[in-house]
Length: 301
Ligand code: S3P
Image (cartoon, rainbow, N blue to C red; front, side):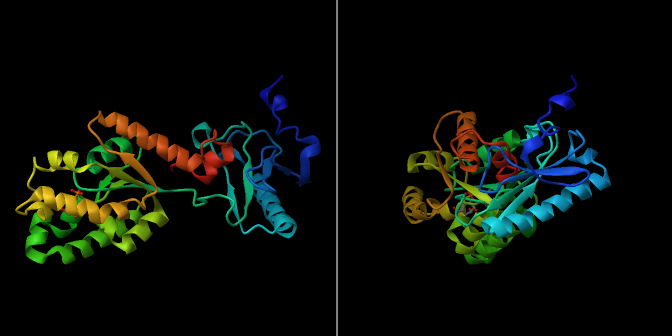
């Protein structure tokens, strides 16, 4: 028996709710929402990219027709429409198929699936760059460091920007650079410790990314920052008191990040692992993700 004859999508039988010459529509057996519909080509085909133009057109005609039917029957507020192509993208049935998932306002705590950045926030010395670089490698995403990008854009170091132009000028540039970086393709972005204090930046981060607060206590921060003199805010008579004050001011704001991970003196890989687990739980929920939710609704990329 060929794989095609065993394939449940080659023999949809009584499940068909509509069909045309080259494709069929059926309701998903494990719906992600009320009315979740699948559109499958009649010919057994693994990849969407192997379909002929008439097959794509036939599938599209059914998607469009089913959308109208679902709108009339269930009155959803929106739809996820998509194909998971390849096992790595969440394709679980070998026979290629479109998901048409009606969405209802409030039916998912965070329905902004698709392409998302991971943004690390937190105090200087919390490990945003060190952890960010390793997290990016694990997620196969580029790593971006906002401080480095600001220095490149300004053609000077951060201490020089503070000295020549002052902190308000630095903060405006920082907000602009982060906005620009968030417009590029998905990446892991380490932000400077003060950037999340700006409301406009928090809004942008919340629109485009999942944010992780790397939370470190004052002792750890002091131990890490005293090795270097490149933090202009700490060029004070009592850097420990300055760190304490900044922590008091900033922690209530950092707390608004989507996720919090304790940064402490353990191997970096442990913190990275905790970030990945928290991201997975956030995107896919605590239960094992279904194909549709893992692939279309909120894959990391
Ligand atoms: C700052 C943190 C620094 C840098 C600048 C100001 C802050 O970045 O942006 O010195 O206000 O906390 P790191 O958090 O990467 O050290």
